[in-house]
Image (tube, rainbow, N blue to C red; front, top):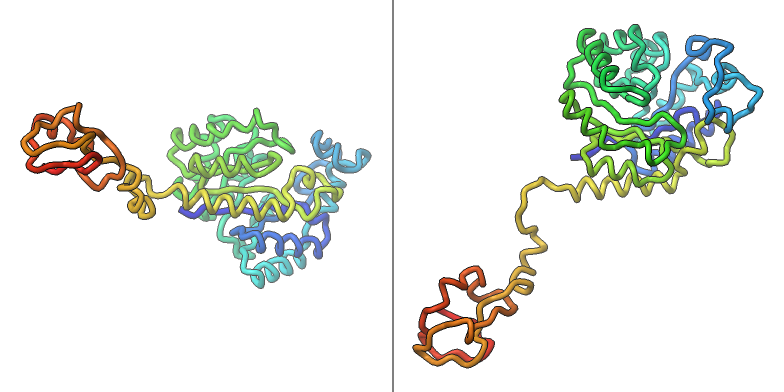
Length: 333
């Protein structure tokens, strides 16, 4: 099964349309399915006195408020239209996360096929109700949440009109970068089993191995931040992949998808030719005369496997040779 790979540009455009278009190019070149941005108005998202998260304070101007930081990272309506057009030209689907109710409506007017609920909105009842009312495919991120909060969010979405079959729940650790010992990939399986939903993984670790492992565990959606250059100023660049790493991640995930197979245990086409070369047959350990009884003393098991399988050893022992056999000659009954 092909996973949905979301290349999360987020706010790594730094408010620059040229950088945003270059991010779309990088995501398309990497083979991602979607390139995702963030849609918000700072004055609807955060109060003026809100502090930055620790990781934001470390990677941006310490004297700047969270509101001021976000204000610089807004995408205008014109920029949205330009990015949608550019993504279409590059053959990759434009996607964005809305962080307020008006932005949700705006993205729906732009024709978004799905909705991403970010981790910070999982306890936002009015927001969840509006998301659920559209009846679209929903990707629900669960950073900072416990099972009870996930259950409550799912119920709100369902009651508002979105069936559970339309919802994919992502395991996520909301820290940038996320410590390896806090990833808890097995929680993805707990969510799947607890709520009967499709699951995926939104990754904030450094490197590409964790999302690849998530696919092997059963993730159907992978989301990963990327940037053009980790040294750029901004809150998320340092915890993002560069374009080469994004390409490597996508390629590795596509390999894992193929490698997972259909789950039926049987010889693969390429193995079949190797069966007789790797398996063994019952052969004469020494010269055996006609009429002599086959025994452990005059039989051996050796490659190749073109003769009688050693699994029939007990049936061969005690039978009499119908002809002479030379040493190493496959036994015939």
